[in-house]
Structures are given as C-alpha cells and as structure tokens.
Image (tube, rainbow, N blue to C red; front, side):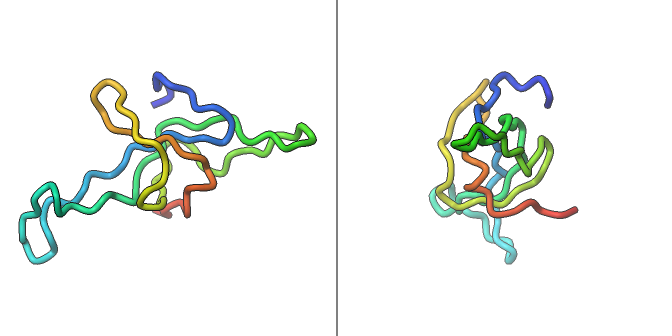
Length: 99
C-alpha cells in the first residue's frame, strides 16, 4: 500500500476500519442499524511525524500495515475511490495489535 493516493501530514495516519460484524456469536444476523462502529483497523498511510515547538521531529510509532485499536468516535471519515477510511492523529490510537 505504499502507493496510497493521499499522504497524511505531520502526525496523522489513515486507517482502513475493520468491517463491522454481520452476526453475533450466537448466530443472530444484525441489521445495519444495530452494528457497532469498529474500533480496529489497518494503517494504510502514515505522516512524517510531529514537529515540536523547538523544531525537532518526533517520529511515528505506527507504520503501514499495523493493526491498531482506536476510540469509537476517533478520526474523520473520508471516502477514497469508494472505500471508507479514517484520518486521525497518532495520539487517537490506543495501541498496536501484536500478531
């Protein structure tokens, strides 16, 4: 995904949210209105990092391909080529899922 069409600036990342669950663990099919917003996704693009007030660059901790957890209402939803993505600051990410 190195050729993603948008390059985030500063400490922003673009995340592809994981698809919402279609059924419950008990097998009940959920209508669209009952599906919970995903809180997990895959990083598809990363900015250069945050610049401090004294001009130092603080590198990003996440990288393209990382699976991350974020707040339910984090980021700004955008559509790129018909696909849903979230643009958020790295500080909105709670953690990286270890594989």
